Amino acid sequence: MSAVRPFEPAPAGTSLPSLASWVADVAALTRPDRIQWCDGSDREYAALIASMAADGTLLPLNPDTHPGCWLHRSDPRDVARVEHLTFVCHADAADAGPNNHWMAPHAAHAKMDALFAGCMEGRTLYVVPYCMGPIGSELARCGVEITDSPYVVANMRLMTRMGADALTRIEREGGQGGTFVRGLHSLGELDPDRRFIMHFPEELAVKSYGSGYGGNALLGKKCHALRLASYQARHEGWLAEHMLIVGIEDPRGDTHYIAAAFPSACGKTNLAMLIPPPAYREAGWKVWTVGDDICWMRPGEDGRLWAINPEAGYFGVAPGTSAASNPNALATIQRDTIYTNVALIDDDQPWWEGLDDRVPALDWQGRPYDPANGPAAHPNARFTVSARQCPSWSPRAEDPRGVPISAIVFGGRRASLVPLVFEARDWTHGVLIGAAMGSETTAAATGAVGVMRRDPMAMKPFCGYNFADYFAHWLSFDTPGAKLPKIFHVNWFRKGDDGTFLWPGFGDNLRVLEWMIGRVDGRANAVETPIGYLPTDADLNLEGIALSGDARATLFGFDRAGWQAELASIGTYLDEYGPRMPQGLKEEQQWIAICLK
Image (cartoon, rainbow, N blue to C red; front, side, top):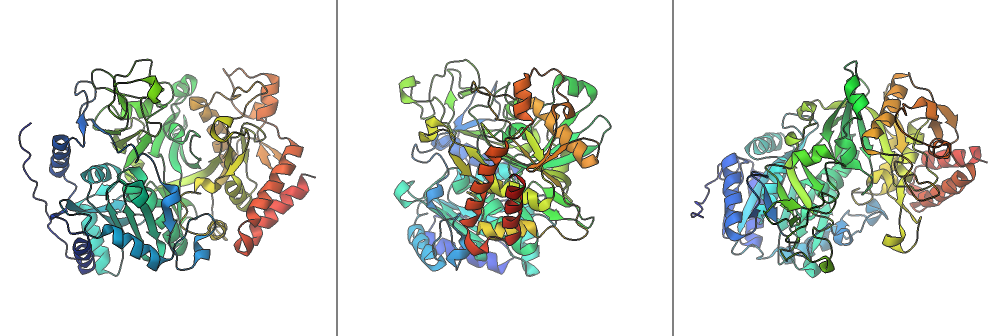
């Protein structure tokens, strides 16, 4: 390979004094060899890729089958989020709540600054201005990440609106008294014993040290777009949520946008990129992907909630992604993609468990594949890619106004009790449904089947403040004149007595979404029960799906005795948050418990 010509970035600084001062202070602390202000250009990206290819940080994949694709192998000790080392540093520990690890801000800053001292010697300090959301949107928010990892810079370019345009917005808003999120990151020594992520919500700042992986290092993602943004949203009157956004277009050409929150391993990306069943496609149904992971919602002048996807790319889990499970995702990552910790077949094509029946040549650590070493691809192997490459990508993803949300869906992985779908009676009931959602563990994971782990609104690892205050913030949107979305709960994972899944899932989930849209429009029927409105099997289009009578009764019914125990468990959970838990939510739980007797 020919020598890589150093890239000379422009602009080489900023007109915003607060930003210039912060960068200078960080440089004085970390002592880099040089500073590069990133402009997000194609030329800059090409130079970063070439530099990483030259030093082995990135490995080229087969250009005939995967043009523009690269493989990164992370340190084997640095392969996932580090939730036990993630802290939310409010001045008052009670504001962080029992749902977060807490450290006093002054102690957290001291700990991190000691780690950062001199850590960039021999390295380049990259200044990465970025915008979460369309540059021109009032819903968008900006940040600047300082990092010493070119891999992080390249990923941030795919995941955010990064570069000169974002810097211009930051400078304009800063001159008008606005602020931006300040993220400081260093690879450090990649030592797990010197690895921390500290969030300072009141300062809109985050410091991350010792990891180069995913949400630990791409600070625009979970750190900014959820932990800090959720706190910011509470004070500014909006919602920052761990939700996909999908548009469902019916044969009449009407499109309803749905936001949905699911814990891990519950099919969120598959739903965001859903392909309708053949009969639905022939009838004219279409599905549009606005976002697969994060949703920011704000009340509009018309009383509805309007949402944007703050991200510009996907940082998806590769294992399990296939032509059968998610053909849109697979099509998306055939070009211009950065893969992390996947395996390789013998002609340098990426491979992972669940993709197909080919045999890998090298595992995710670059070793000759040996099943005795475990999976060929790391179970948390990832792909980073621009959202625009998705075949179902919606142009509305770049609409500065956002999209109006017709329905909010909560869901979990429950083998028993919870029916396929039910609708909340009203907003307060819907907030309770979201607060109580979660998944049952398996024997392989915990040694006991059916252990319930609650993950409110799928935000347990990501809410930047006390969950009790978070629930109160959700309740506050129910005001006179508000035209709030209907709220539903789904469970794609209900099992029969033989342990098999009763619902086929994947594209057939559109049948459930069709019923939801019918409920929004006032056209679909339901039966009122103490847990909410349930469809009968006749209310869903089940043509072509073979379901036994027992399966139908299980999917569309409810077990009164089981729900009595569930409501008691929910009450115990709410009480864990003490007197800060909003009384209205506790009263809703108590009222349903009475109705179930």
